[in-house]
Length: 150
Image (cartoon, rainbow, N blue to C red; front, side):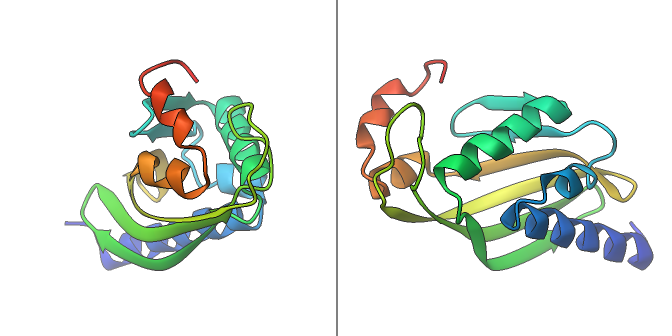
């Protein structure tokens, strides 16, 4: 069982991680990782491994959805992970997978599982309904690309 001190430090890292994503302070977001950032986006099968790849992910998603943010955040702490449930919101105001913006907004429930080494993140694994997101922004045609390299 983790100590109360480690639990508190991990929760503070999650807050910093999520807040700096929203404010686009991605250098600070990368600092919440234990030296080697790693993301797994489960609905698309995308893996972003290393600082350069993760930074590219941040820039690409925030170009498409510059107002991306979280709402209704709830955390669940275990010895090895913190599971964060939240609603992800944003508006498609930039290019998304080579397609022009639609100006439409989305709101989808997300579960992010953060894996830790001591008080730093080693992996963020994200689960959400990608079909709901692309339909809400008026890009249902992207569903035909499921399983293809994006």
